[in-house]
Image 1 (tube, helix red, strand yellow):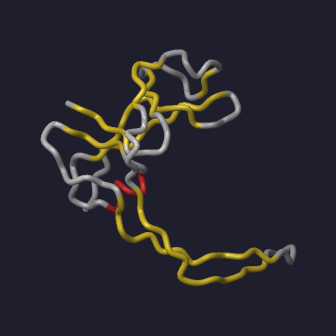
Image 2 (cartoon, helix red, strand yellow; image 1 turned 90 degrees about the vertical axis):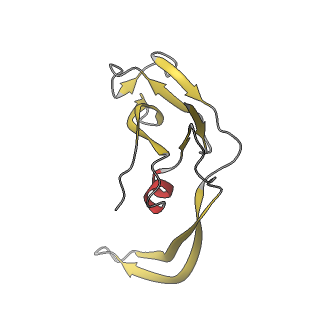
Length: 124
């Protein structure tokens, strides 16, 4: 089975016994999936603007954002699984060939450096 990474970042897959936080991000890596250079994502459009005011009187601007069309996602191919961002997988209803990073592993600063497994999103 071929696994193609359609995200912008390498996806490091760690052994299942890797803790949630690692001191050295290279320890325990079983496989690194480099970005394929083609990226699956949702198109984004700002459809309006708003502002809300906190209890402290701070005005916070809010953009009304629409995520609609999936871009850069190839048609299903025999023997190929695609690693995509979670939002893309959620929008692609009916696809069983999409995987997302699951059970994240972070470095000591809290930045995601990989995952212990891949997940397949079940959409309705």
